[in-house]
Each structure stands twice: as C-alpha cells, then as structure tokens.
Length: 426
Image: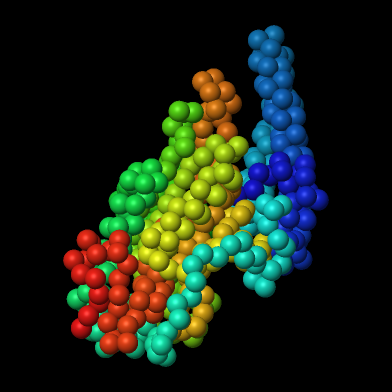
C-alpha cells in the first residue's frame, strides 16, 4: 500500500512509475482524487485543531465567569456551537480517510526503475538453462501419457468438484507427495529456510495485507459465513505470520518455506488452457517467503531466483528466466522474475515459478516493521515471495521431457529415493 506522503511529495515520480504498468488514465485519476481528499483532510485537521483550542479556551472562561458570579450563557452557547462544528468536521474526516484508504488499497505497487515498461510482449529473457531434448519419436502431451499410465484421473476430480480440480492415482499421487517433500527438504537443508505449516484458510485482514483484497476478490474462493478465504498461495498466511509486529533487528532476515494447496477461481481466464494440467483451480505449491532489511532485499531476490532455479536444475528441466515488464508484474510486486520450463508435448514454455520483491508494499498493509538497532525509529520490512516451485506445470514438464517410446516416463535421479522407482509405469 502506498505511503500517502510519497504521493504528496513525489507525485510526478509516482505517476510516471505507475504509467509504466499501463492504464495511466485510471491511476492518474486515482492519484488526483487522493490529492484532493488529502488537501481537504489536512484543512479539516487544521480547522478541527483550531476549534478544539477555541473550545478549551471557552470552557476555561466559562469556569472563570461562574466563579466570579458573571453570566456565562453566551459563552456556553458558543461552546455548544463549536462542539457541533467539531463533530461535523470529525465525521467528514472519517469519510475522507475511508475513501483515501479505499483508493490506496486498489493502487498497485510502483515498479522498480530496472523493470521494463509495457506489457507481456516487453518481458525480457535474462538467461536460459539446459537444452530441449531431441526425440526419435513424436512427443506426446502429458494428458495422453498420464491417461495411459493411470496416474491422472481428471473425470474423477471433475465429478466431485468440477473442471480444474484434478485427481491423481497411484504413482501420480505419490509423485505429488515426493515433489513436495523433496523441495521442502532442499529449501531447508541447502537454502536455509525454516519450514512452516500454515493454515489453508485465512481471514480478510490477511488477504488484504498481501494485496489479494480488495482488488481481486472475484478470483478467490470465499466462505462468507465465516469471513474466511481458501488460500490462493502459501504467501498469504506465511507473510501474515508477522502482521502487526515490530521485529528486533537481529530477527532479520527471516526465511520461511511452506507447502500448501492453492485455490484460484481464475475468473478472468475461463476457457483458456483447459487440457490436462495446464490451468487449474486447485494445485499444490511449495512457497518461499522472506522478510528483509530494505538495503538487502534486491540481493535477496536474486538469491531466491537462484534457489528456484536450483530446483529445476536438479530435476533436469530446461528452463528460462524472464524479467517481467511493468504491465505483467503482479499487483503487489515492484520486480518479478518468472521461471518457465520447456514442455515438448504441448510445444511451449510454461511458468512454474514467480519470484517477487514487494519492497514495503505488503508490510505497510500488514504493519510489519523492524528496528535497525535498539532505540532506532521503526521501519517497514521488505517482503519477498517465490514459488519453489508450483507442481502442475512442473509435473507436465517431467512427464513430457521424461517420456519414453514404450510409454513409461523416466524420473530424475533426485526423486528416486522419494518414489522408490526410476520410472512412472502403468
């Protein structure tokens, strides 16, 4: 969430950075409205302070006149009038502050100056790793291979929850469990993260703190009777572990990794990528979340990207790293890298990880602060999050890159101890 002072004092910079995301007219109008409201807010505060000072003076004068036996009726009437004006000013102030907050909650984070302007077409390929496998047979898509192996049962999932809710069987179910366990082990033993097991339901404050609400309410699954939401990612509960906390300097950095199922309505993506595991309403993911000092957050982002890359390298999956353009960068993020794996069966790159530095955007919304040293003024932490990694498209890439002519799928060596087998077989 924006610092109102920043909008007031660096209006041109904020307008320019948000314009890089696109929809400049919309954000310009929001900023103009905020500035108008802020001017009225400050005028009301000044007027209210003046009125309260006058009320205090009048109250003292009333007391003095009564002690002297003088008539204080006119002064008492004036005090009553001043009280009414104060109440009216306070009521208007509450309305203004609520409107300002509502606007600020819907403004996205400003992209870092290193982020290219424009939309998806302006994303930059930073690097690539691995080479696409050459086949001596025509590679098949994962849904055909999985059906033949009996490891994926989309009809069963659809029968109990609808399309986009897959069911796995046999080695398919074990593969999900193996990937989650292996990735959590990797991030805790090699990358220094602390494993946590968060709730899979969160409240409105948690969703607002990380930026899902109010902007994207139509994309989340809600339980209105309990004012709870199914997590769209473990980022939400884990980032909110420190909501409304003031952290000591020696606590930072904090690094958590967590598994969660993820639930997303994908309201704006109806009809897209409906085959197999390409786009789902429920999927599994291992998440990385970091709380950093401001001066170290961009270095931490680069390390986080490298940690997600390590997952794909050990799985032997060809991938590329993209720096997202401003218009393709997530609402709460100032800078994001996507990792995409190559899937030969569907003949395309598939996103499996998104690593973002949100700077102090989420910390302001969730009130997560720290002291740089004892006695120092509190500052907002910088929060980062990254997929380490998401399972469905990783599974797609494993199946399609590991497929053999006999219909089996060769598994990467790191998964052999977790699965007790070298191949997916019928």
